[in-house]
View 1 (cartoon, helix red, strand yellow):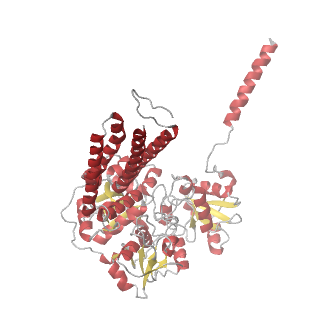
View 2 (cartoon, each protein chain N blue to C red):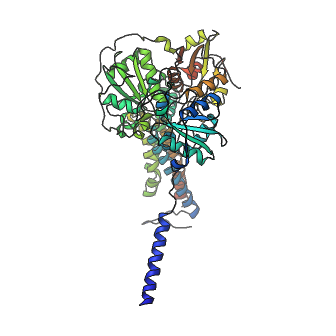
View 3 (cartoon, each protein chain N blue to C red):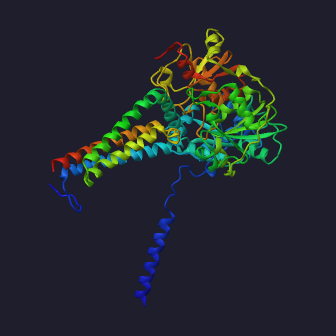
Amino acid sequence: MVGVAGPSPDWTMSRANKLIQYTLTAFQMLCIAGAYVLDDLSHRKVGVNHHVVYRKRQYLQTLLDADHLMVYGIILGILLAVMVVYLIRHRGRHYLNAIMPLFLLTLAIGFLLVLPAAIAMPAYVYILFLSLIVWGLEAIKAFIKLRLIRVK
Amino acid sequence: MSKKFLIAFLCISMMAAVLVGCGSKPAEDNNPAPEAESTAVATAEEVAAAIEDGSAIVVDARSNDAYAGWAAGGNTMGGHIAGAVDFSANWLAATFDDQNNLDGMTREEHLQKYLADKNIKTDSSVIVYDENGTDATAVAAYFASKGITNIKTFNLTDWKEELVTYANYQLYIPPAAVNDLIQGKEVPEVGAVKDLKILEISWGTPEESGYLSGHVPGALHVNSDDFDDENNVYMLESDEVLFNLAKSLGITTESTVIATGNPIFSTRMAVILEYLGVDNVYVMSGGTTGWTDAGFELETTENKPVPVADIGTSTPKNPDLIDTVAEVQEKRSDANFVLVDNRTEEEYRGETSGYSYFDMAGRIEGAVYGFAGVGNSSSMLYYENLDSTMRNAYEILAMWETAGIDTAKHLSFYCGGGYRAAEVLWHAKVMGIENISLFADGWCGWALAGLDYVTGE
């Protein structure tokens, strides 16, 4: 086991776990870069623009219509509440460090779902999907961190 | 003393050798150097005899606009010698990206295709003509570099017979003539200009589209999304939207409109305006690259249109120019009505829709394959030269004849959503074929309407 740099480490992370964390972070960065590139291309290339706008229209009428959005809103609300309750019950800097990125990402996805400026982006649907992947990867990272904290 | 002199002499000799060596390094140039001295000159009688008995292929090396009929851009004689083929010197020098182009072909691959299209082989006898002495020399040098040895040049100004033009060559207006109009000069083919409107048609806002990076001076930007229905697979908008677009651009039926930009965009806009009732619509040949290659400057400031309340008609004056799905359904059983499918072979066979966002693939039953391009839904390889000018009309007609497209019948051109087909329709107009229309909704409109279709060969 290799200790993690910090003033009072109460949990440690193995080399393998660190590698997993870095790998997941790298995938997250790739997703964010992909979203950026797609957004840029959707403002420069007619083929890309028409593709993403057409797909957005399809999804806004199906998986992202008002009924579905309400369900997603409830799910996000529950997730946020669970995280808040968990943090209240497990006070400590490491719990906060493990949960906070996921909490903020959950909030960001909530904003992405409802903010008109976000929905107006041509590549909105793809950016949303990539954000969900980033969220999923962050959830895995948080799970690993919490598991390590609890083991310790 | 003599030793020092010897060392100095050696040093100077070595430096001279290095410098001479650098100077004699062959320049990297795709275009072979002119070989004017080595090319024999043909007489008018020889050219006439070659046309008559087919003993040599007579090649027009001037611009495709000149070949079509324009006496502009440095050429004083519009049209071509009857029986001559085109191989423009512009194809050797036009701005062209070997790596990034819609056909996925290098310039050399294009040129090889043109040689094959015109049946020019290494054992062919060729007479290349021009007016300025440099176009024919450049083309002759290219032919020579491909192993063609029997080449002569000819100065067209020595030709006393009448030249042949395309029936409506003026519909593709060369950059030089557009520049004359901008300068307020008279262009006989265009006639009196009451209200000149130059349009730059491309997708996106002025910032997104590249309009602000450079456009023909005075051009107004038209975003293709303004006439494409975003809610309906980018098919053509309703008449009401099209009329409002014309009004917002300040266009009336009396305007003289020059459409510029990528040919599939500019011809689509030109067809729309003709459909609405604007009589004097022209498309600038060669696109924006043709403008800069002709030596003209681009403008980078935005021009704002002055809207009009009325364009001069409230209903389309040429409604038959654009077919609807219902009209095609009704007419296609008519033996004199030919649906021409201007898409890739893969789209025609139903192997792909041509669009990443559109899942249905196939063709309208009874449609004749009419060619467009290769590899993607924007390529116009079979209708455009590499400098974005119109392909030789005789070759297009021969291609249609092979495909079984009878120009004596009514031809209704369609593609996926009406862009490629609009360019083919404009070509047909240039060739003097008038019994034509554009099925603007095309395959997407047909498929979305749930109508019968076929796939395969």
